[in-house]
Amino acid sequence: MFETSEVTRVKRYAENTAGRDFAVGDIHGHFTRLQAALEGAGFNPTVDRLFSVGDLIDRGPECRNALDWLDKPWFHAVRGNHDDYVVHFDTCDVDSWIYNGGLWFTGLSLSEQNEFAAKFAELPIAIEVETTQGLIGIVHADCPFASWERLREELESPESSQCLIQVQHRCMWSRSRLDQWEMHGVEGLRAMIVGHTPIRKPVRLGNVIHIDTAGWKPEVGYFTLLNLDTLEAAV
Image 1 (cartoon, helix red, strand yellow):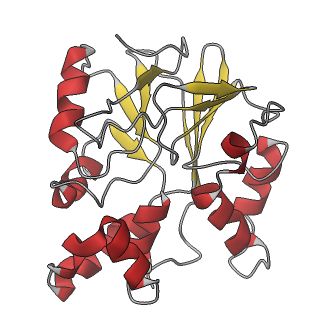
Image 2 (image 1 turned 135 degrees about the horizontal axis):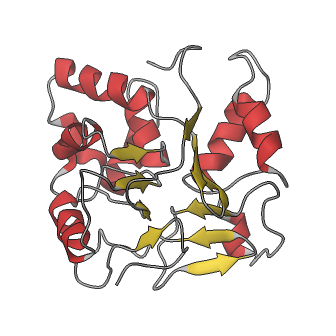
C-alpha cells in the first residue's frame, strides 16, 4: 500500500486568467477518444486546463497511457474508485477489480505495478478550482457532508483519524445522491463536479453536476467537457 500521511488529499488551483478550465467525466482508458473531444472543443494546452473526476483506467484499451497524461502540466485528476484499486493493488478485492475491468494490470511487471501505484497514490481525493464566479469542487463520486468546508477538514485530518477511510470511500464510491435525487447540494461552493455513475446526459442536482456521460463506451457514450466558468458543456 503506497498511501502515506504526506499525500495531499485536497489540491487547490488558482483562477486561470490566461485560458479556459474544463472538467471531464470518467476516462477509463480511452485517451485517444478524449483527445478527439478536446480537439473538437478547441482545447489549447498552452493556456487551458483539464480537470478529471477520476477513473483514469480499467475497461478501455489505453490504460497504460494514464501515466503519460498525469505528466501533462495542464491535466489534473482526483482519485476515482478504480484508481484506488491501483493504490491498494496488493490488498484490494482483486476479483472485483478484474470483473470491473482491471485485468490489464495483471499483465504488468511488478516494477510497473509499483510505478502505477506510487503515481496514483499522489492523486488527491478532492480538487478546488477558483473561477471568476466562485469556487468549484471536484470529487469522483460525492461529498458525504452538507458543506465543502467539513469535507476539507476531514480530508486534511491526520492519517490516524477514525473516519478518514470512510470519508474517502464515500467520496470515491457513493451513488446515493443520484439514486435518491437529492437536491440540497453542497454549501460553500458555486458547484461540485462528479462522475462515477454513467448517465446519458449531464445532470444537475442542486449545485452538484454529474458529468460521466460514458465517453468510455464508444458505441453509446461521449465525453462531456464542462466549462468551469460558464458551467456549460463545450459543443
